[in-house]
Image (cartoon, rainbow, N blue to C red; front, top):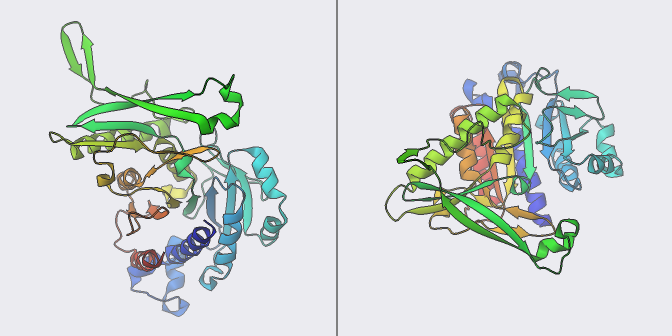
Length: 371
């Protein structure tokens, strides 16, 4: 696990280097020589007088942040950019503990680290605790935001579905625990003895008297994707998730075809929140997690895998996230080793395709082969 940690750190730092140089491709620039016009490219794409925020979601104990900053500090091409990594967690007590760690305070002293509470169900702005800066709607970050999720999305909310011969089924979960637990909600040990069963109910047919009507969309204003989020995010999220369901109904539309999959509603909510924090919605998401990047992974699948490890997590549907980013005007880069347990994916809304992102594509391709 520690080896994966360090590899991901190095990989992310390399991708970031090229992320802030990828617009070189527009002017035919392939090196970092300012004499060849790089300064003009910077002026168009990155405001050097403003910070570039790297937001780590669900930072946990902060080890990845420490390793990440140590790797970034060695990249001389990034020294001219005002980088600031923001370590976040949804629990205020965890954030306060992180702020007191001596290893992390050293990065704060260098101006490279800040902290914020980020609960996607409650937060629409980030209040940076060290600099007293607010990033959010009305006070967006000038430069593109970079989001890092290291085993983060697998613990976010997802909805379970099955498509059989083009028909959509809801995956309804029921959790059972041994009767020896008087109140399992108050005993963390009960989690390891839980069993989750799924029942699949055909959705889309509503019986009214003698008429049978087909409902066109699963998510509506009454049946929302997530709770506790603003109307603009709810509307966009609803449109994306309904389009994803339509896409999967098309993929398994033939007789005898079936696929079972998760719609990553929580991860998509997080992405939309960050887009509202960035000027023109420009973000790059680097996610290292266990998950699926191709739709064929879901062929004939029964129930979603739930991993119990003190908490619980599921596989991330990176295939759906990639489709969503394309809907948002962006694109995605996936690892070539589809069977790998840790998959590093890059998703961005800074352009509709990899055209003009030659250096980013070259960097990602180079490091994914050796990862």
